[in-house]
Length: 253
Image 1 (tube, rainbow, N blue to C red):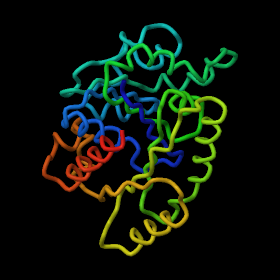
Image 2 (image 1 turned 60 degrees about the vertical axis):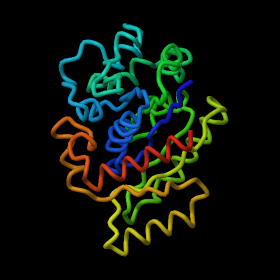
Image 3 (image 1 turned 90 degrees about the horizontal axis):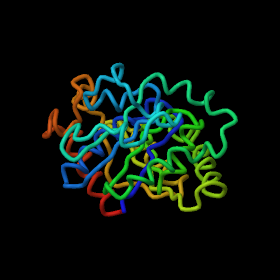
Image 4 (image 1 turned 45 degrees about the vertical axis):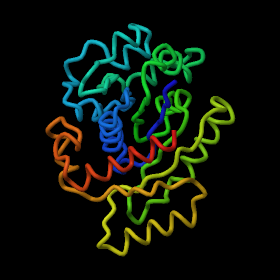
């Protein structure tokens, strides 16, 4: 049975989508069968795999509303070993449409349970907010991976996120674990990056991955070409870092 990891942080711009795309692609390169679920209405994970998010008939939005089955929505072999459950701006209306629906926290979980055994890893990219979509991701997931940007406000909001994870665990998904945190946009040349890492290590009781994702221009360029970093530039520092992170995640499974 596959492991399901939600990638979450209510702060925007911390590298959630970058991590969802590139961790998935690197797990796939290591021979793992991966499903990527985009639960962000911005649909950046969808377009990051080269999918035209504006020309899709079935997305996670139609799935949540019960208008199609999960098999209808999944786009298979987007790249080798990677399938994508796509998203687009329509998903922004889901929160309102779900008002009054019973057990709405479990809609995604119920659908994913049908196909969970077909994949080694299911990676869920969460929106940058703690809303019903994020809660659906957390009830579906086995664990939560939190990307933390190496910047001054890194710890701000993190306690709120951990509180949310603990609430979901207590009330909705007792199996949910904290996968750990991964540092993104790390710059070894700056004292700030090193200070942030030390600060988080002192204040956080969670597992911290050894791999740090560097600030890397090739990583920033890759999404505009609709490619994960290991296909766009396999020799870049960003690709090497995500391959190492994939090894750690596999070791953790």
